[in-house]
Length: 199
Length: 131
Image (cartoon, rainbow over all chains, first blue to last red; front, side, top):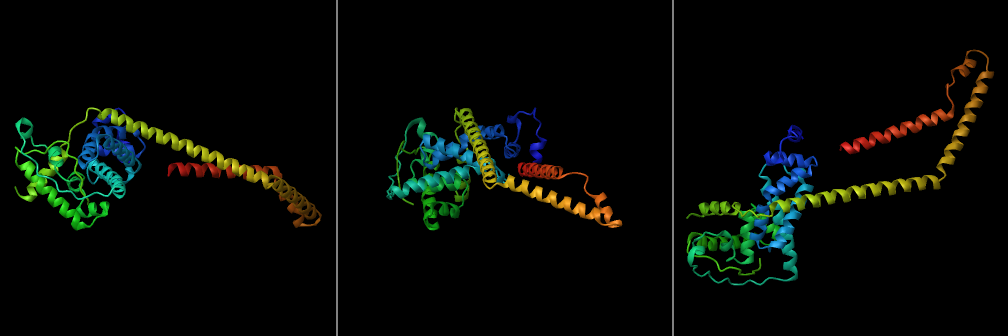
């Protein structure tokens, strides 16, 4: 690849652009890919956690996503950001896991109570993670996929094997709740709420 | 706040993520898993090559191919010799055919053929590596 050929061996990997690193990785340079993982692992892990994965699962899936990305690095054309591409791979891996679990343990639709008013410094902080915790699992998943992983409603519906209308209504409800939380700085979600709802 | 501006804000919030302190360790683990995968793949390919080679040798030996090649070579040599003798008996310009016979024996022919096959295999191997 031209970019890989242009890479001077003396240039530290940290100084290279993502596209150059991806080109080197495509030619089999695992260290270059390691640099990409170093740069973007936090973003991928954070997305998986925001989608609802617990930290251990998020880390495992993030690693699997990077390995899958390396395997298909030739498919990465550099049309979008590398991190966005890996995020989509990670999101699909999580969805696969999520669907399997949903088949074994069908989820019930559950009404989510409104978040109570917060107090003190923490309540003043605009916290996406806290706001996401106030959403049902399905809403959180759909919103994260659309706004975190950059999937379209149709792609989310296909990935979840759910009707498009259902996905749209989950996104709409999720957005409404987030809007309320993020618009009012004195409102925050109760921490550690484990909510589940069916798609 | 309008829907569009809220959605844009939400996308910005999603792209703003925490930086985990163990990110370097995470990357090392990814590199290690990649290396393990490559090593395993190399071992599997080598094992498949050795197994294929052994099977090919066993098949060739079992089918008595070497014996058949030897026998065929013997027949060819006898036929060439007979032809050479017959041509030498014919008077005139045709009798000169004997002078134009190949200047090497059957062994050299098979050696050249073997080298050609080897060169072909090397070329094929090289092409596969480049792909």
